[in-house]
Image 1 (cartoon, rainbow over the protein chains, first blue to last red):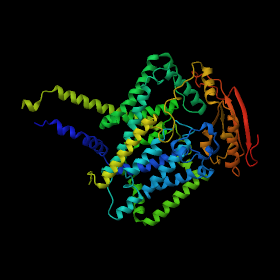
Image 2 (cartoon, rainbow over the protein chains, first blue to last red):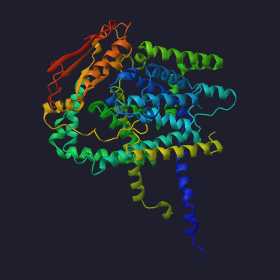
Image 3 (cartoon, helix red, strand yellow):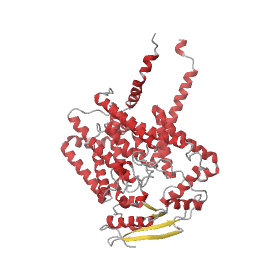
Image 4 (spheres, rainbow over the protein chains, first blue to last red):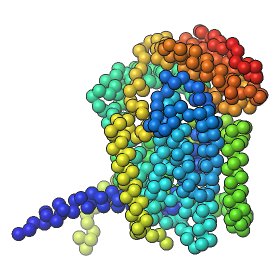
Length: 407
Length: 167
């Protein structure tokens, strides 16, 4: 007699492929609209990051201080000066075209290649940059599995003319895949960071008063850089239990990223905590993970935000939409190209685009976290309240006699 | 109307994404670096980051100097009043580090020369100057260092723009 185990076991390899595929294409609200808006936010953020970069400076940077990256080590060991001169303006122009959604797939590939090459050289000088997502993973997964051109782009406008358009609420696999793939990388990054810290050979748990020394060292660095200085540095030195608690909190928090797989309020709880964590690190500890900020926008329903804000901005948006709708596509393409070229040139020869993006120097790698901290804290509080409410609701239901059974 | 059923193109996208994910995950484990850096760099992730200096305030900063070498800061707020320098604010933030290795100081000087010679001629910039500054530090104080009174403050070279590098 055949047992039921046989067929069940034979289904395991199939399920091993099916389950991840099903998770990777699971439901995400307003996925198409989110990706379109995310593309715009991503390009603006990437341009903002480029303000800090100055590739030509690396031309004669002492070679023994540089570490060879995989890209630069294999392809461009010692690039000519023209590489350093051209790479940033070309990347800027590509980002402007990508922002407009013009030839989106090609521009995504260009941004991936140019950004990868640039970062390969820059990270040879400064390793702690947290730029892998913005420069590599996001454009890579958009290119392979995603489609962020379907909404809010000139490409989408052209497709709508040929009846091939999609709506912002569409949550087909090509819109969900890149969101989930990037999430996998984020989970893996944080989880392995927790593992590395927990290794017996790692200094995380063996070093004496790690947080105390870190706080003091960063205070000096922040003072030199003119950044906010962390108050009460003596806390970690005076109270060892607080210092030990911080170490454990960081490891548990990083490992908890696995819970992003669950979704729902748990996902919101982890993401809001992560933003608070990054903001505190960025503002007071000088441990800036600013480039990673963009990843979190991928998991937020920007489309619903836009829909909520739309009535407020309707009087402003209406004439723009009318003008945009009545303009010939070729005119828009030519305008987009001119805008991209102009921005690239202005980036190289003036400080105008940089000043606009940084609001005249007001926004930088530290100050960008100032609004994030209160917003993320409110989000965190809201999620905790919601979680508590649902828990209390569950308990009450569990405490009540089953009315249906009584009936 | 939303259509979430994968078609042929979608199935290809899913397979390609899964393959790339597997390659990236295996690659980062194999390199032992974590995805934060691989494949962009070949740095190990947690080697130098948490090597902290010893306790006392004075040594705290001095160890930083020993690890990273003397620090040359370029302060363009004084040197580039028009803000027309090509590298702009980014350049302001860049510090060069001299480490205790042969020719390090010379190489950093050459970097400054390159900035002066190749990037700045013809621009509204007067000069570029490298300075070495070391402050006395009490990290528990607020602020933790006397910003306006560095203990060592010496010029490592001034480069007149338009006249070639000279110091």
